[in-house]
Length: 351
Image (tube, one colour):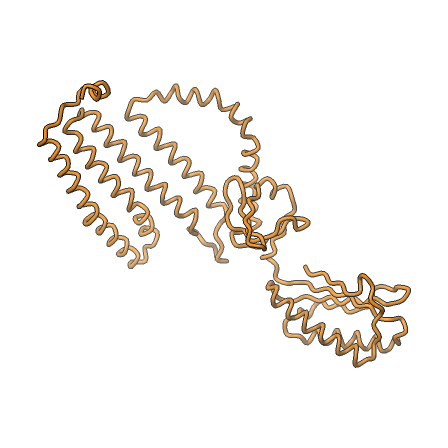
């Protein structure tokens, strides 16, 4: 008790009666919050969801733990007030209430950084919203800290002055991080992609699906199921292709046929190939190219180019397979002789 009085001069030596009363209060408080308060909150959440008020239900559900913890903490502090100064107890209770109130708001913001809050007509979430929510979480923590500090007469003016003096030095020290943050804001404002989009950078150095977009970096899941954290400034300063936005896929094929083939047979075969591509149900009809586009010492090069109305790679490959089988049969029917195989005998380029 002598050591404790050095910290809390107004503390009094507890009697067994005081201890039993404090323990009884804590036990009653725990039973109330676990069996009554928890049930009230759970029932209220269910009632709100049933009434199609999902936002209010989500907010109350996220505040669930904060409310119960705040209640239990207040019960414990009030139990200890039997031995502590009333003013100190009051400040402590206020600090706990403020902390858990801000903690509830923080939990709500944290929930909506992971779950969509506002969806546009295309079923996509505004990518800028998670940035504001994350910034809001930081502001909530700072505001809670200053509010609690004011209860204990903390010298905020001196603290803020110290922050101002060191702000310039800190800014220089984290200039790279700030570049990534502003890069992230640029990504959000330009809105080049959404979470779930398939993107690739120039040269396909990075290609994958967007998993998350935060203040400093963007999380991309690559084709081998690896996760890559790409700094936002990197994405801002380089061309970025959003493959998910494609409505058509290009299929381009080169064939090499021998020079001894008769011109009429080649023209007829090219016309038949064009017709087979046009008749396929999944190909675009407005742009089909089947022409001899290059002349070589031992062969003609035939360009076959068409578009498939899909963004699904599986569908694209299936259509290309159908066309290749059709081309092979046409060449056989017209007795077209293929050129001797070279290093670039069969080439294709899909985009």
